[in-house]
Length: 339
Image 1 (tube, helix red, strand yellow):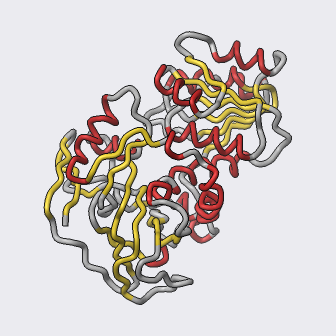
Image 2 (tube, helix red, strand yellow):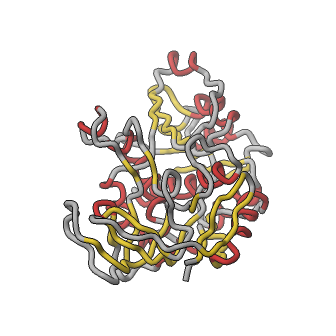
């Protein structure tokens, strides 16, 4: 089969390799679409601590069941031809988090596409208990967006359900846009998105969000304007960047909440005094639960997904997709098409 493989830092190549062989309790998925994630870019740059070459990356994928080897406790069992994605978390099942139903923060958490071959290929093998079916009415592009949408759904779930009247989202990349969509879908209208990229701000505006370029205008000033000088009820930090970490406490009102969605690759300065003086709740989030996946599938039909997907590349040209993600200013969600 054809597979796009990470071979060395900054080198990915489409190669002919042996198709995976299903073991007991696994399914073979014929991949149709797979999205490039920020973690894939970290692997591509040689900066991921666990990923080892050669590796087929890709944990945001959708396809159809091509083969099933019975075994395990998957309920209900999928059928040949079902449209599916994967809940790509590989959990130890033994640590405190796993024992208490919180396997998404497993002490030894691993992922398909990082710790074993993933979806940038014609076929991928997936444990049956990680197979997630989605409705026939959804496209494979939509199926590939279930995983990142579940990240946004989880962020809102972790935020709780206080009486929000306004919110700010820092970062207009794919996750920031999806968080904005989830907030709007939940009925919140007084919402500001901000980013330093003019192209990302333009895309957010195309999606009918109120958005500003933080390089041109201070987002704190704009948030104070839209909240009568009080600050946002809740802030979603989706940038994972040092300036965002330092500024987020200025965006939120006293007793407000900051939801950490972006992954900071190294320690960054945070205004801990503001957290104390304003009694801010700072809440971390990591990936998603199975319930978040189900909720993402439920709301997917309302997502204007063509405006999230910026580029599509056939598997043979997959290396171009990584080049675009790393260099193109207008890149958002890049999809690798394996059909």
